[in-house]
Image (cartoon, rainbow, N blue to C red; front, top):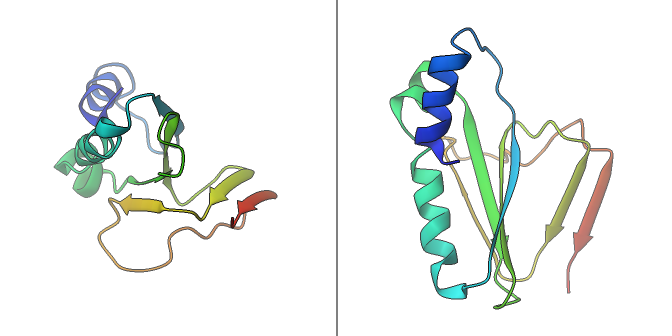
Length: 117
């Protein structure tokens, strides 16, 4: 589900929704389209509906180390989930948050996995 489909779903079925949090991993087996699809997905979450009306911001990141099994992780900001896994090698990251700040931080993370190979 991209941002356009989420918007339609929320507008039609959850019009009174105030808080929206999600964490979604998309797996690709074709290295050549990973960044393109990641950009498309994040761009679909940058409309007036997401940014201006609701102020729901999203970050995505992926590790380009393994060319044959790519995963892009998307999650709403601030990060409200108890587990966060980060690999530092070849990390690509983007956010819909309009200001430059460290929006990775969260007081709710209880388990952090960090691989700094």
